[in-house]
Length: 240
Image (tube, rainbow, N blue to C red; front, top):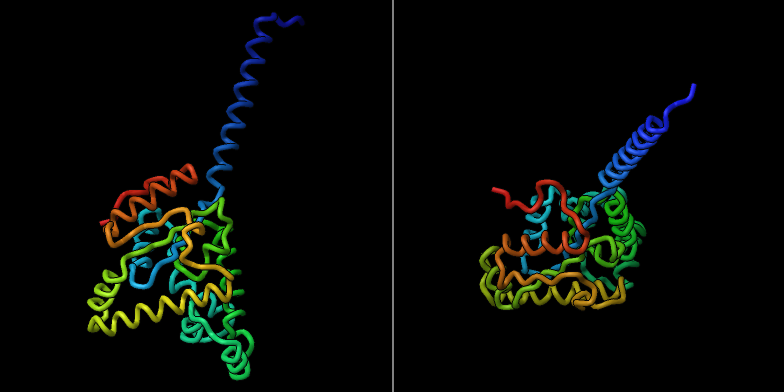
């Protein structure tokens, strides 16, 4: 039986629409399945970078990896969390590493710690939807598929804020801030062969001396969307 031409055209058009609809649904599913890129937050000591990172994670509905990362590394290495925390961003000499390896095993050395951190950060990067604080994550993730943030603040502001939060006098607070900052820079120089304060390593620098944490979070969320082209549904609204 001969099918009229206009019927054939209608059928072909309907098939094309079905195919386009199928492809559209497949593309949407692929977008939904793609992990949300991670955000790394490097910070000057006393700049409240971790507090900002937690606020960003809440805004985006992401996981927050600060002490959680220390816990995960401790689980993977079988070491005490207090020991892992003591290795975090603190430079140690090769003699210190040798002594540590004698008493606690080779996994306790700072170099091995950095390798374990790298494995955890790569896992977080693959799964996405995470804000990672410090630990050199900005040097581990792929720069094109993450937002790398550096949080800064004038030294005097950091000293006053740290003194208030820790109940210290300003002289002791200044000594602590400067010591930790020097230690961190040495850590990154030794293990990543780079200057952690170099702005070229980051997509965005945020000054918490001139911006509130809420305002700084707004800036980071906007930068995330600007660089990566999208935001999770409902993201960007300040939490109560």
